[in-house]
Every structure is written in structure tokens, then in C-alpha cells.
Image (cartoon, rainbow, N blue to C red; front, side, top):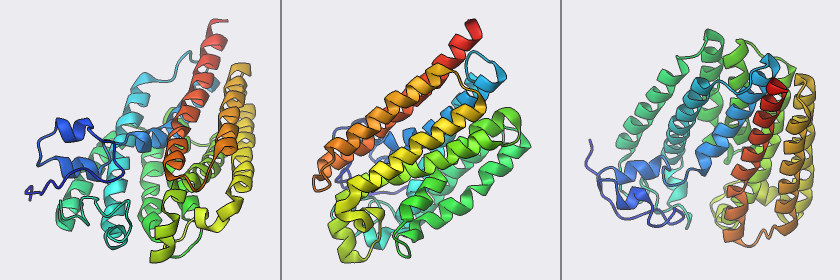
Length: 314
């Protein structure tokens, strides 16, 4: 079951990463399946969780978000992002083999078998389940409910020009989870945060998808990058503008203080700069701009945490 063939790193992976220099060769293909050498994925999955948790803690009057919950959400984000990537690679193995950037991934390159990948996916999902069971029953049910969206996502690029919307539904689910972990229910604030996360995800993943638009056109994969084309910058103005407005609505409904809104303004300027410098025909730049969305997540988180600290101590 654990016999693998290490044929080297994936083409678009980080070079000379600890996965390739430290892990035993037998484990490297599994680490590449989970994208451990590319933490941007779990950062983007985790930020909505931490925003939601911070917003909920501000409402309760706590100085800081619950550290134990934050740790659990971090472990859950890493595990479920890895499981999701593994599942995506299982479903897309034939497509990945036809795309320059992805044909060296572990399954199409023969580093691991589909059976091995499925076992690895289940192990990661089991870690996610253990994490989920630490929360209240409402949050457990809410977390399990997201699996239907996760399962549907890899197929969406075959049937709609908006697979990024479905990705947004999945990747922004944490905007509901953090709040639910604190209150055992949902309200308008986390719902607005969730909607903001969805349009944010559509925006940043559209930038990401511009790396593959030529190959995608050849193999029939659909995306908002292909849909928007030369009008991507205008689409991002709408998407990122909606992101800022929805987040502002969530903060307002939750009664957030001025520092939360300061963080949002700074974050919005960061998104505006992405639009300003974007070159949709420069794949390397698109990747870097995509990764910079983790900075946006950090800015919002710092704003919310700072607001909680100031409100608590002053």
C-alpha cells in the first residue's frame, strides 16, 4: 500500500521545500497530494474561520478569540484542505495529465496509485472528523453539511463557467463555523461574512485560473478566467467591491468597533492594488497575486483582534 515512486516535485510546487529535502521518499508523493509544500491553500481556507471566530468573540466582549478553537480550526483547515486536494486529484487525474502545470502531480505521473490516494484522503478526512467532534452538535452538523459542496466542486469545471463560485461555497464555509462554535447557531453577521467570502474566492481564484486558460481551452475545462477574459479587471472591481461591502455589513451588524473597519479599509486597498497591477497573460504574476490574498486575510484578522483588545481594555 505504501510503495510509491518519487519522480520529483510537481512542476508548480515550491522548489527545495522541506517536503523534498526532509521527508522520507516514500512519503513525499502523499505530501504533494495534500499540497503541504503550498500552505496558501489552508491559509485561504482558515482565514474565514478565524474572521468568524474573532467576530463572534468581539460580540461576546472577549479580549481575544478562543485559542483552543483557533487551534482546532487550524488543524481542521490543514487536514480538510489536504483531503480536498487529494479528492480533486483523484477526480481530475485524466485532465491533469493533459495540462502542462499539473501533469507532474502524483497520480498522473504515477507516483501513487488511485487506491493509495483514496486511502490517504480518508485518513485526512478522519483527522478532520476528530477535530470537528470537539465542537458543539450544531457545528458538527454544519461542518458535515459542507461535504456535499466539496464533493461536487471538481465536477463543476466540466458543466459551468462558474466553478469558482462552488469553490467559494466550500472555501468560505469557515465563515459560518467560527461563529457556530461560539454560539451554537447562526445569525445575519456570519451569513454576510460567508457571502463576502464567496465573492472574494471567485475573485482570487479567477486570477489563479488565468495560469491555465490556454490548456483549459484545449481540454474543455471551464472557468471564470475564460469567461471574463479581457474583462477580468472589470469583473474583479465588482467582485472585490462586493467583498468589501458584504464584510462591512457583517461588521456593522455584529457591532464591530472602528479598528475592524480600519482593517477592512486597508484590506480593500490591498485588493485594489491587485486589480491595478494585474497582467492576466503573466502566469507567474497571477500566481503571486493569488498568494497575496493570504495577506488580505491577515489584515482583516488583525483588525478584528485589535478591535476586540481595545474594546475589552478600554
